[in-house]
Length: 80
Length: 543
Image (cartoon, rainbow over all chains, first blue to last red; front, top):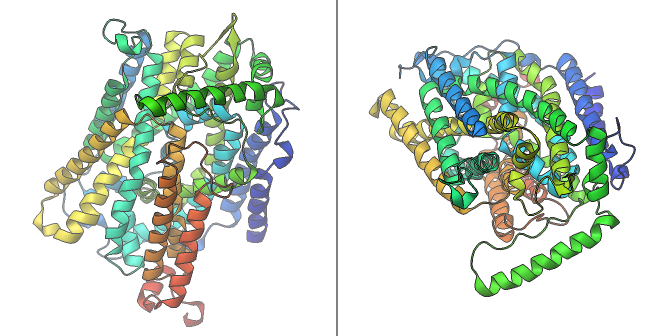
């Protein structure tokens, strides 16, 4: 699944370069949003979905339990 | 006057939050700077989002959209949705884990340990402070412009020279003063509380302003129709043939004004009209700008406040949506404000300072209450508080106690030293802001470029065992030197749309710092095995 997420992120970055819409205003989504804006709003929504997949399937194992090393915690230092 | 009182009430709320948060303080360094590492998912999302979306987002996006069009959303917002979330995921979570394990309070403490070099702090500290400086400046300039824009005509006798508006020197002074007070009183906890309140405010009001203004302009369709008729270039990313004569005439006027200015050298130089449209390579290189969030010292500090790694999940997923909710209204409002005509008159006069376009459109199209609320929400988009706090943190921990020793100072003395340093930096920022009214967007881009130059060294510190101290030094110096070279060549940010081979300077700057890091790391002695094991664990074959 990690590879799928990497491919999806790469696709997002590729889709971000919407050169095909460079010189276009229409179609106007909902009658007021030019295509160049609509496409990128869609990319924002797609980004949230891709990162949700990343969080679900690719969460790093070494950060699940993290304990401070002895003496490292700042709370053991003097008060202000 | 109504707008002014609403802004004043908003500032009082911020102070109240600062003092209220102080009641929960534990009076330890870890609590003052990191809220005892106990921040949950929602507050972390609000803090990370609020800190990445400054005056640059609200004032700068609408200003840039009014000049170059809807392309600004793709340049900054959708790019940020992808890249910021990636940085929280691959950098923020790892840094949090190292911070929790080894008790770090600052970015420089981590780099010193990872690269086995005390001296790296001496190189990084001035660079980080110097790069935060223009960021602070964009915040102060953006907020000052906003208050000046919405208070036009409020005090005709007191401020006649600014058409009755609160002048920037006063508005900027008040804002900076209020932020300093609540940061000094409540530490990071006050900035977390304030950020959460502010984000709720500006996410709501940004959308509300879009609906109210669209209604005043005859509906969403009609607002966009006026843009199509009056300046279609703003709805795409090329110069529309219909806009060419007007653009060429404005360039001719600029050249004539420049000639006159060069003879007399009196007053500020004329501003070159921005060319509508966007280069494709330039657009591509904008993807590198959001990498800067992996290296901002004030974001590093917020990463360390997280209760656990899971707290980052909401930020990774929710950030692109929050960016969408903030930026889409701002970009549309910028385009509509620049092109709308009501009763035969433009909503915003054509020669208006772009930084004031959003505030003026709101003031002219809505009532004073909406104007005041909107101004308050624009004021909310600042990360001055986090920047002030991290400056004090870095100065006391990375410089004073690191070089002079903790035992020479009481904790109260350290706090006072940190605050004095912050006040000094803020005072310089304030004075420069009065003398340098440059475009918020352009200043922000230069600042982010500098921070992005540190991205390769940050990623290498976290993921490349072979990255060495000298590789890190070479990367920092190469990135800093190329950044300064391009900044100098652009007239210190005064050249609009400054590009290198058609791309933003961030591309060659990042390339230079990456090449220096890799080449020098390969030819120098690897880090000690104990250091590698400390940060990466034992190699698989040794387990």
